Image (cartoon, rainbow, N blue to C red):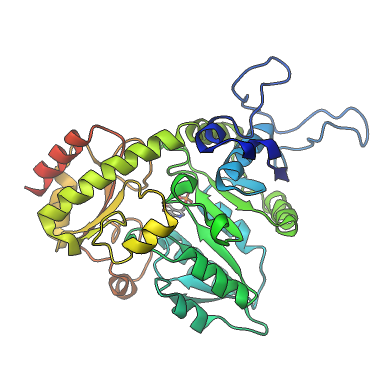
Length: 389
Ligand code: PLP
């Protein structure tokens, strides 16, 4: 399993982003980690090898990525996967039939689909609650043969609702449960859940960590040695690992994470304010706005808010008009790339959630989601101005 280089933790965030987990190639001195495009490794004799046997278990490019992101999150161990969902699927294999989970009701549609359509059939039990109120988590925690874990996503996709990570960790730990946090939207640049008590943090690296919309991947981070040993076993046994090229693409992306996140955040703040003037603050969901009902939690646990904004336009027709008129924003699934994207959660990211449940969660037909990229903000606003006209 991949453990961080301890001395990487001496550097501050931007330096870690560029260097953590990476050392000049011992063969050539190449400054960039090579793409070890291999399935197997030659062994010197029976029982003698350089620590690498078969690439499902271990690959040096993947290890560099795992060390890099672990250092950014402030974790001891990293495990890279072939998608965010692959990461979560392997995390869930730490548990067993009969285990109970308290889950934020606003989690990403794919997370809900994995739990509701697959893992429920394997005997796992899920209770969905509005985790904006930590008391709701406490109310659903079972002791005895109790709750195994609390799973939260903060901010949520797409409504940008927040959960107080410290309060969730305290509630989970008091009941003997783990806290698992999807940190995809905030990234470790703006939010570090381990510092607030999380036990497992995971990401869709497809999003901000890669940042260039050119691969699909995931990663899980842990601090606990026993969890790390078990996760490495699952990673190798289940095999949802990324290829070395994809691992390298994320590693290249994380080198500019701090720079990109600053610009996503600047653009996000400007565009959120512009949208408030257009449609009113009750229709703009962005934790950086003073009008966000949980702005105070945002200030406490996030150091910035990024480029994700959702807007209630009022109707499917109005949403369609905006989505079809944009020219700089592109109508597409996904988020977190340098280019700006726009999407319709009801028919895209949350299409797998039944209509009644989706509407109950506030994901209406009129809701659109913006992933503000790092283009010039004037061009993005001009584009939205044209689209909303
Ligand atoms: N978590 C969040 C918050 C997401 O937005 C997504 C994908 O959109 C995922 C997890 C799943 O990641 P992937 O698409 O890499 O499997």
